[in-house]
Length: 278
Image 1 (cartoon, rainbow, N blue to C red):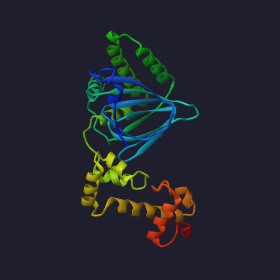
Image 2: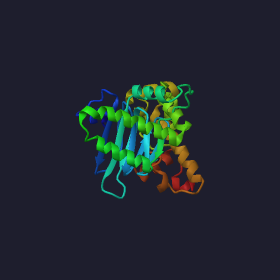
Image 3: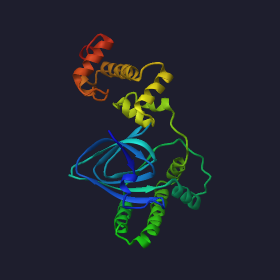
Image 4: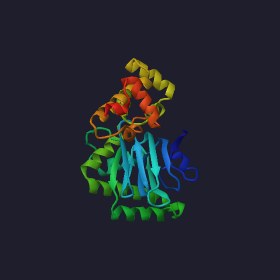
């Protein structure tokens, strides 16, 4: 799975020298789990479709009634068509420099950094819809004015979201300029019970697969494949013993592509098939 460098792949015909870029993203086919290297913070104003993003230690799914503000970094995301045959979102990228200038201009610049959350969910409303329509008009504006207008629009949406979400949003904006990086073990252990593959977890750690494996053995004194399999199979056993779900309900969530492989691995570990546990 190739890594997409965003917004670089969108900015071939547009300059990002001023630290701001708007891009209309459209597609007519589902894109499942893209690897994305996001080099700028980004608003993803989802208008048609559904989107899920996996971060280092959490994930979030939104529909067309919501939008996301995403922190720059290495993320995995899935973009899906909904009831219509198109996926459409308006992407608004901004640099850390532009964010810092905004915070210095419009806030007291004295808030403590809170826990670093890589996303902020925005509920779309009439104001945001009108704002997005104005961005569409801006795309057709002459180049002499578009840069200055874009800066005004950036400040407008930031100020509106500060008005709408108050201190919660202000804290989040300050967290975007913090330099702390998620620890390796935090990333690994947050994805123990996900269905992500080793390569995908390595990507979230900003490592190649070979580097990830070496680092994992140093941290856990065990190969990552076996460690993760044991943890996920134990989780599967606990779920089945609760009696609410069947093996066919959970094998995908445990990282297995089919029920047969899950059943074989389960029996090899516990000496009983998943059905015998129920």
